[in-house]
Image 1 (spheres, rainbow, N blue to C red):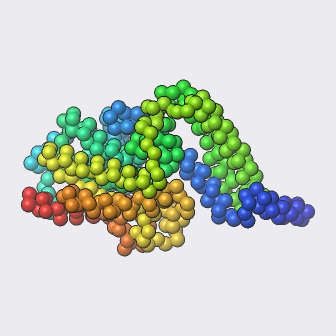
Image 2: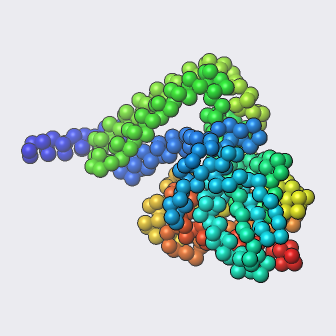
Image 3: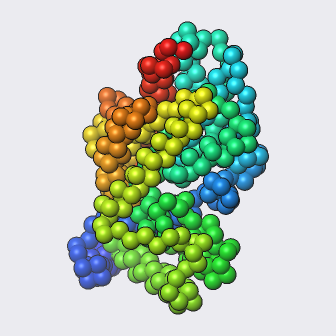
Amino acid sequence: MLTLILAWVLLELGGFFLIWMALGEWYSWSELQLRRERKVFQFESRNSNGFAQVHPYVGYVEVPRPDSGVRAFSGGRAVPVSEYGYIDDKLPFQTRGPGRVVIGIAGGSVACYFAVNGTRRLEAELANDSRFAGKQFVFVNMALGGYKQPQQLMTLAYLLSMGAQFDLILNIDGFNEVAIDALENRSDGLFPAFPRNWRVRLAGSDTNLGLTRSKLLVLGAERVALARRFSRSPWRYSILCSLVWELLDRRLDDRISEVLDNYRRLEHEHSPYVVTGPRREFPTSEDRYEFLVDIWANSSVLINRLCRSSGMRYYHFLQPNQYVAGSKPMRDAEKRVAILEGHPYSQGVQKGYPLLIRKGESLKTLRIPFHDLTGIFAGDPETIYIDNCCHYNQAGYEIMAEAIARAILSDPVTKTE
């Protein structure tokens, strides 16, 4: 037994120098574990929205089914997907009336989860005011995970064209517009305004792309399984096991590169236009972020015009995110869940959010009720974030509901109604 232990120790020491030779740097348990976590995140983020289908007007919607997998934090009730592809237990076509308040909620996954988990608190806050007391509230969820402008604009126009009626439109967004582009559009050579994962969604329109997609899914799943296996104890603490993982992962990476190279050769110079969209070059990454934020702001202006022309009130909210510096005090337990160093989304937040905040201020000069919510958790050290992307627990959505209610009730137009 002692001989085996001694042999293992010698192998570990040998592995220390071998991994230094392989990586070109000294071994770090935390850095290698971080690299494994990134492999899992990148695969899962690229292949999210597995039930979503391409839609001719809004990019994509969910497939109608009884259990969407989106559950309310309180009570655990599963919210179904309606016949129109949105996570809601009602159709999006509601009728306004003197005793009703129809509120549409637009945006990405944070807005979608707010529609599931935050509207009860929002209703309670609004109902305390005499302007809303005694009225029936109807909340229509028109948000979906991954939506980014101009999808919110297109969704509203699509629903209005078919007779949908709203009193208020709440647009909760900003994160997707700046965070997911680098990982999903820019890296795939896609037009920045196209929906997320557009290449993946259109795999069926190109035989070569479809075959490549299938191969990459298999290799990606193998890569994730490998990363998870070596992330478990005790293997994650072994230098030798980390070396084995590094070598096996590189082998899979080589196979993935080979599949991509074969696809590029088959496609010659260009992917189909339906996949890539217009070719748009940007001198710097900053110029690309400016373009993304301009789309976001222009879409908000157009939503406001649609609302005003239809007798609706529009409220635009910039959603909070943990990667906004100084936006929330965090204890170690929350940091371990919410913060991932080198997260692919963090760069987009750090570079894009200052532009969003600045552009949001210019929206106010156009009399658009814009509200920056990035600081609503600044005084709360309790755990709110539930993942290292952008999502909150029930307490977080209730804080957001209170902030949204304050914005609505302080609106000079609402005050005079």
